[in-house]
Image 1 (cartoon, rainbow, N blue to C red):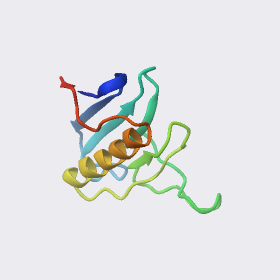
Image 2 (tube, helix red, strand yellow):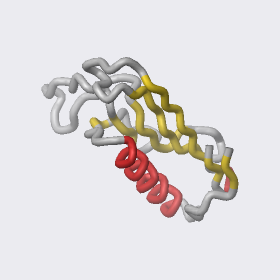
Image 3 (cartoon, rainbow, N blue to C red):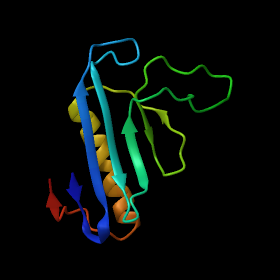
Image 4 (spheres, rainbow, N blue to C red):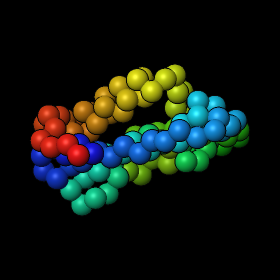
Length: 111
């Protein structure tokens, strides 16, 4: 966990699993940013599939990697390349949200 000023925090959950059609990279993961009231603000995970943006008639992708841009975003597909890129993309979004809220991107504590 990383803690930021104002009670904002990020949580990482990742574990190796057997590769499947839904998780071909063999990782089960959830990276989330939470606000001071403990509500998830953004998240990257692969717990379930999501509908591709751009029309209700598009098929759900088989791969379950997706991300939630806001606390009300139902999710949008995420093109997983590797763990390093996932972490970079996640922290880009954390920085975006914290900056929009006037919160420093500098972590104040880590667990």
